[in-house]
Amino acid sequence: MATALEVVRGISQVMANSYDGARDKDCEPIKTGLKREEKEWHLRDRRVIDGFKLKLQGNHLILNYHSECLTSEHHDKKFEENMEKTLEEVVKFIKKEYKKVVGETLGLKKKGKMDVMVESTSRIRTWVRAQCVYEVTSLDKAKEEKRDVDTAIKDWLKLGKNDVRGY
Image (cartoon, helix red, strand yellow):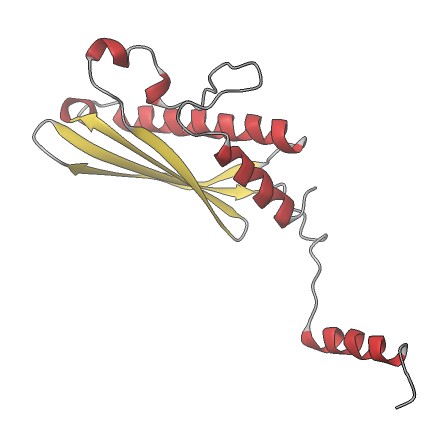
């Protein structure tokens, strides 16, 4: 089990390795599970704009995904299902990259449902924002050092007793 600091450092390194155009040790592109990595977008002659970010709040990891899509895409019956698949691909990438960076597995447990918000920018294009919350199950709360003010003051006073110089 990892401490909170180790988990935060590992997730920070995962995010540092996930920028658009990132490459691994063998100079192969890193696949994060986003639409911009598909080869098809070159054929449609428009750039796919999508990305994700992570936030930690206590023992919860919040995954935010944003993308631009056509209005016809978000009226599809399987739109939310496709969003969930995209978030699952991103979570797979996060876990795989975390395992590479830290050497331990990152335990994530989905909490609740995914939230999706669609905003219209024109009659053709829309912005999509999806958010999903995961509980970080790989945190070991027993390793976290809990100190109160009284014990900190007593420890500080003990340091002074050992270094008495006679005044």
